[in-house]
Image 1: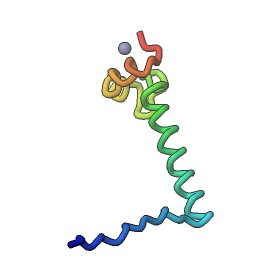
Image 2: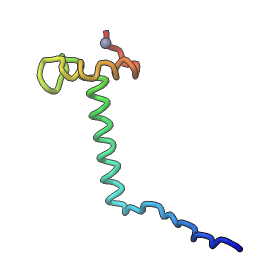
Image 3: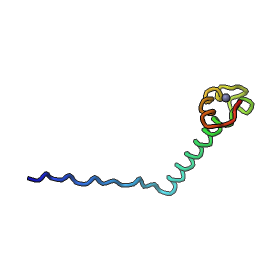
Image 4: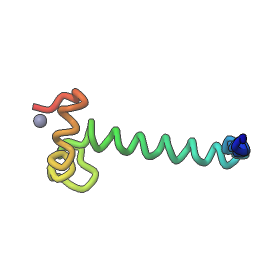
Length: 71
Ligand SMILES: [Zn+2]
């Protein structure tokens, strides 16, 4: 007695058009640059949200973990 074999599961890659791929690329780059700025550059003196250290203190551990100069 043989057991019936299950049909092989087919997978298909995600297919994006050129404009949609460019939009994803733009969004990814924008998000990455913003993340880089807030973790690596924003230090109060050059803060986006005024002359305070809120962002700096919020990402302080990540800043040290990633090796950005701090203090
Ligand atoms: Zn520090």
